[in-house]
Structures are given as structure tokens and as C-alpha cells.
Amino acid sequence: MEKIAIAGLGWLGLPLGLELQSLGYKVLGTTTNADKISDLQEKGFEAALLDLNKEFDREGLRTFFEEVSVCIINIPPGKSVFQSYRSQCLELAGLFPETARFIFTSSTSVYSDRVILAEENTSVLTDYNFTSQLFLAEKALKTELGQRLTVLRLAGLFGENRNPARHLSGKSGLKNPASPVNLVHRDDCIAFIKEIIRQRTWGETFNVCASEHPSREEFYTRICEKQGWELPFFDPESQEQGKIVSNQKGIQMLGFSYRLDSPFDF
Ligand SMILES: NC(=O)c1ccc[n+]([C@@H]2O[C@H](COP(=O)([O-])OP(=O)(O)OC[C@H]3O[C@@H](n4cnc5c(N)ncnc54)[C@H](OP(=O)(O)O)[C@@H]3O)[C@@H](O)[C@H]2O)c1
Image 1 (cartoon, rainbow, N blue to C red):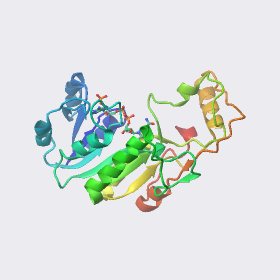
Image 2: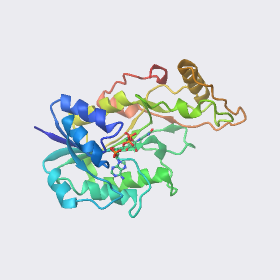
Image 3: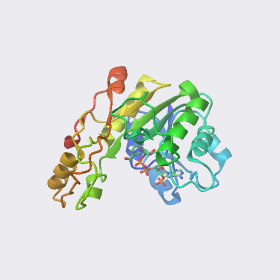
């Protein structure tokens, strides 16, 4: 049975893992939380403890990951205590066999808000901030893994128990009412990752984002109305244009079709 590892069986990683199991893969995964291990095992995963911010059992994990053919690095940058996120990702990748392929879940936040259309080859911010931690990790992993790596720049994640409108509900003076939203539903992220694995598309970078981009004001107001939440209020003087993230490369190269192509369908 082909083995796939998901480093980070969290909000996205867990349902992705269940879906891969249903396709017949043996799925291995990691969590930072020892209390979750037995629950993950009950769900059919081979589970191991890994916290990149703490000392971990390198040799044990190297043995655990033997025979893995694809690893999905699905751990967000956190507050690293003694190592940069980039170094942590490199160290993690080094625990896998030399034949393994990798998917790294980055973010469309690597693109500056000053670009109008963010395509995969658009230059990104390089300031030392949260955004560039992801970009620096992308760059380091590409240098190390070359054609064995595909990078997915995910737009803002939406799905079960995760609705970004919740954070804006009831707020006022919100910036940039006319800026387009760039969001993607978890189901489409899972479908996209499955497609990369199925087509064995390595050595590429893809944006993963729904095709429709309503304005922030229209979208968040409508969602709050629908949920019966207090409406958000935007500052009409705030005029920044904002970026649109293009999803065309994935549609054209993979023939990928978004099931939830409009954020209003989420
Ligand atoms: N949130 C967004 O809108 C957004 C947008 C674009 C891209 N992304 C990316 O999408 C990916 C999935 O996001 P998500 O929302 O599913 O994340 P999540 O629910 O926070 O899950 C992250 C997983 O990583 C594990 N983890 C966290 N810190 C770790 C550490 N220091 N060492 C090892 N493992 C660690 C967590 O372990 P536990 O099981 O112990 O919790 C969990 O399994 C991330 O890579 C994120 O950067 C997110």
C-alpha cells in the first residue's frame, strides 16, 4: 500500500488524510498533542508526535517515515523558539526518504497587496515578517528538493467551523471595502492536493483560490446577513485596491475544476 505522510493533521490535514485513506493510501500523520494520538489511530492513521518548536526524536521519525512516497508539509509558521520556520521545514523534509515527493502548503499572503493580479510568477514581498517566513521556506525547500516539490499557495481558508466573516462581524471602520476577497473552500483544497498526487505534478507552484472575487464589503456584509450576525461597517475613505489571486494555472495545467467557485456558495 502506498504511504503518504501529512505533517500536521489539523483542520485541513485531518479531512485530507481521511480522503486519501478512502482512495486506498496508507496515511501517516503528526500532531503536537500526545492526547490526540490514540484518536488519530482509531481513525486509521499511523500517528506520531512532532513539535518543531521542541526537541523531537529524529531517528524515530526517520524510521516512522521510511517508505513514504509523498509528504504534505502542512504546518503553519508559528512563533519559533530556537529555529527559523525555514530551517524547521528543511529539517522535517530531511527525515524522509530521498525518493519522496513533497507538497508544501504556503499561502497567497506571500503576494504583496500592491500587485493587481497575483500569478505564480509575480514577485512577492521580501520584508522580514510573517508573510516572508512562508516565502523563505518555499525558497529553501525549492533549493533543497527541486523537482521533488510542489508548492501550493492557498487563499484564505473557509469551511467547517471556519468563517472569516466572524472576525469582522460588528466591527466598524474596516479598511478597503472595494478590495477583492481571495478565498478557497477546504473541499477544493483537498481536491486540488488529490489532483497533484494523482497526476504526479512535481516541480511546480500553484495558487489555489476560488475564481470569483466579490468586494470585501459586499461579501462580508452578505455573509453576516446570512448568518444573522451583526453587520460589519467599512470606512468609505479607505481606498486601497488590493490584489486578485489568479487560479488559471491550476485550471489550465491540471484541468482542475473548482466545485465551490464563488465564495457566496461556501
Ligand atoms: N488559515 C488560512 O487562511 C491559511 C491560508 C493559506 C494557507 N494556510 C496554510 O494552510 C495549512 C493548513 O492550515 P490549518 O488551518 O489546517 O492549520 P491548523 O489547523 O492550525 O493545523 C496545523 C497542523 O500543524 C500542526 N502544528 C502546529 N504547530 C506545529 C509545530 N510547531 N510543530 C509541528 N506541528 C505543528 C498542528 O498540530 P496539532 O494537531 O497538535 O494542532 C496541526 O496538526 C498551513 O500550512 C497554513 O500555513 C492557511
